[in-house]
Length: 209
Image (cartoon, rainbow, N blue to C red; front, side):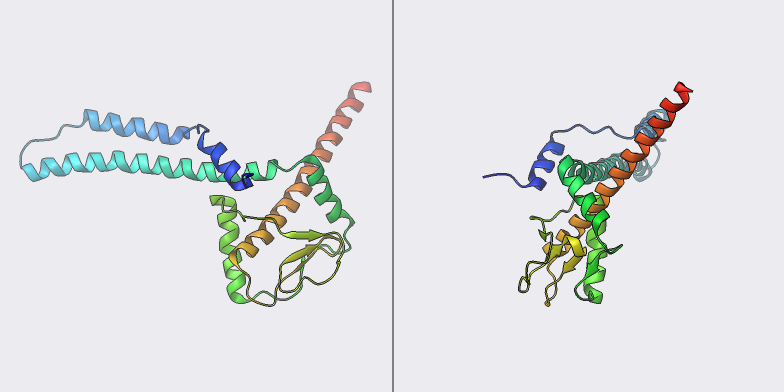
């Protein structure tokens, strides 16, 4: 059985080593030095235990802070890897669809409910910062080939999401977010490539002159 994109990305990142930010390494070294150089006065037993426990608590806090940072770093890389894992043809197709579309922004077949808008906002942040992705990709078609009853799908030449009349599931919301992110990423990549080519052309022109 083929692994899903999420499983493939998560396994790859699990085996990958991450660089702890220098600021956290520096903070950890500083904390350890302070603990080593500190002089705990052995007067009341409770005070001594408090001093030791406080020092240990600082070390634990620094380690936890580093762990959270690494986890966030890994999640961001899950997002980046998901975007960069698209093939060049897939990115070109997304970009072409957007450039050839007659509308300037995505359209919805109906208004989102307040609950759907709030949930999508939360899921988008989790998508980008926690690597929370859909299990499947959204149904897509170039032109509207007919209504798909009570299901979510996207028509490229209309740049339109056809939403089910019922409340959308979390999976469907993630599918919407996933497609929007991939389309936006594809356009950004194309724009950056064109800017880079333009700069190279100007540089070559200046050398010829």
